[in-house]
Length: 250
Ligand code: PGA
Image 1 (tube, helix red, strand yellow):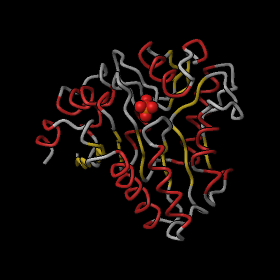
Image 2 (cartoon, rainbow, N blue to C red):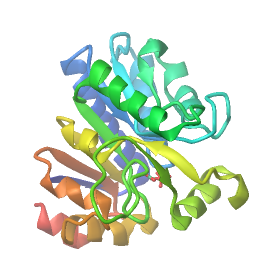
Image 3 (cartoon, rainbow, N blue to C red):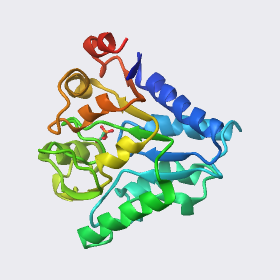
């Protein structure tokens, strides 16, 4: 694992955007795994700037996102489809028919999950690069702490800490407004990606970053499995990256 620890959130966002930009420049039809949440917003802003400056062309890029709330359709302002459209897809020249997000409107979880796994196999195979955030409980995608590493897309019941984090950041603090379930890509497909960038910013991520990358590999800290991937870059700001992590991977 490589660690890029920048001073500020903006610098960390620019560094993550550079890695994604490099993947697109090296392969015009790159397949990108994308994440939602507060963390990647700055990275997407930087990518839009690079597109506007003429540096990046998204016309042949394909993307698939990690997760979606069960029960929300893409026109809901808190859906992850809406997030991606408004932070990136509507602002660059991507062909939206090649941007995939799990379908939150499918009521039957088995169907929703097997449909997404089928789509990932057929349209993606393996990402060239996958962008991840990390939950304060160590989740990646919405793969919450559990007794085993979940490999396939699944319907997950969110941990109370995740509901609180998401209410604070996105639902105006209204806990009751946060859906309790989500469909999430499994860790097996995330690990298939050729390269993975995991972003962590802000003091609230510091403890979990240390646990995930200096502690044991365990499904109780799902992000810890990234220690076993051959090409992972942890990109963060000074508040989120403890010295112990910098030391271990230098
Ligand atoms: P956040 O979420 O970026 O909103 O902190 C991270 C995550 O849950 O992956």
